[in-house]
Length: 237
Image (tube, rainbow, N blue to C red; front, side, top):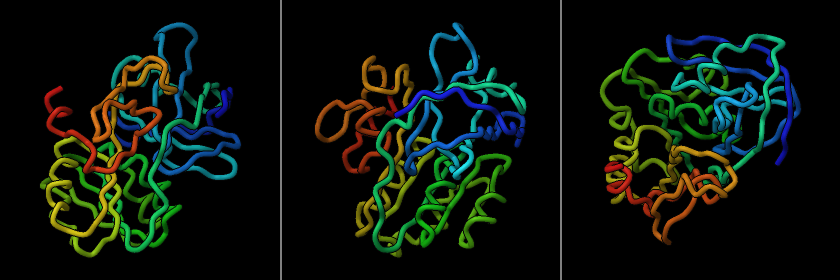
């Protein structure tokens, strides 16, 4: 893990509330891991946990949705500005074997571009409730991309065709995906979004109930085997 002050390469607005932030430097990480970002001094107090969207030898990219003061400040960064990164943190998607589906809903598509790069034989499914965004990046990288706006992307997936399914998106979508995969041979892993203050397991703010007890999403997760996640509890929070 590292702490690094780095320079913004670009900050592209994709929709009214979604932007793509590229930062120059040599970083490392695995699909599904995240960094803590901040571009301010004292306020807000906490850095913001953002999953790795893409990673090259010279830059790291984040897909970010406006949601509060921290992301508003990040959205205002321009080329040449400075940003501080801490990470990478968390456990990401396991290295796959066999046929793999990458399933993203809304902002849940964010960690799947880097995943598609690392898992080139996967098939990508992207679902949006409104205006699609960032789809061209997936299509340019990966030949097998299915996307739709409205409805549920889950209806487009032949779940019996895959050995592993890696998903990130709204909790109801992932809970339904777990229900649908229960009678298949596919192993489902889900990336759970929780509020994180530190990213290293000190504050206990991201604790969730999984099959082996209460665990911190920032250190044990954010990726968990779906059968271990108590979706009923999460949906009630």
